[in-house]
Length: 246
Ligand SMILES: *[C@@H]1O[C@H](CO)[C@@H](O)[C@H](O)[C@H]1NC(C)=O
Ligand SMILES: *[C@@H]1O[C@H](CO)[C@@H](O)[C@H](O)[C@H]1NC(C)=O
Image (cartoon, rainbow, N blue to C red):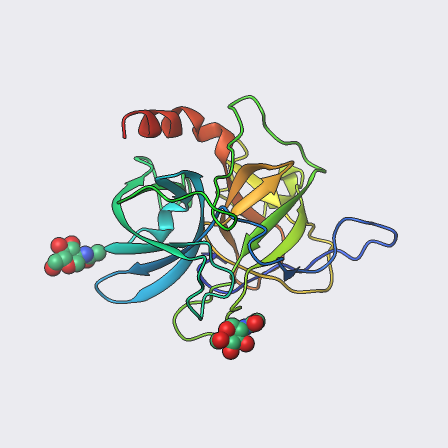
């Protein structure tokens, strides 16, 4: 049983003795992740939230399953329940879903949002670099996921941005997902992990050595790691083409 991580995504993290890497999720230092975007998505039937990240002054990257009838993007946010001076709010002019996005097979879960205007670069708003096609990451690497832990319309969530360190796993660990495809996806989070919870959100980035390598996509409904992230390097040609022609 798997589900897109629009719902509460809880990573159970590893408590390896002496490991200096995996700990628990924690609140980010305010505005220390200036590329983070908070997305308010409206469909005809409902409203929900996703994460995303600014990759160019007028483009936000997120998951394709965050598409809706209209999307509002908030940049420069830390506590999303109160308007902060650092906020910049944008309407989305166009949603570029990956043409081969398939919600039934959970693949190609990537989308680019063109903003109506360019964001101003400030202390609280900035872009996150993408890796080149050949700059892929390998299992064992410890990366960082960030999000507001959106849980849907009624469930509780975090007001403030949270982050957690997660280990990139060998693809064999994602065999629990029959549709997992290592060419298109990253397997993230140690299944042997035991404690400490983190609430993440769809569309947010997985950052490895300062570049965005993954987009939070889906996990198991009981939130047991690992979970699956879209592998950004695979999509560089498509991303480049959209950015170049828009
Ligand atoms: C929402 O409503 C509009 C206008 O009635 C319609 O064009 C659009 O296709 C609807 N979207 C969905 C996802 O049903
Ligand atoms: C976020 O802002 C709201 C409204 O001011 C406040 O009640 C809440 O405590 C804040 N959350 C955190 C985690 O600081």
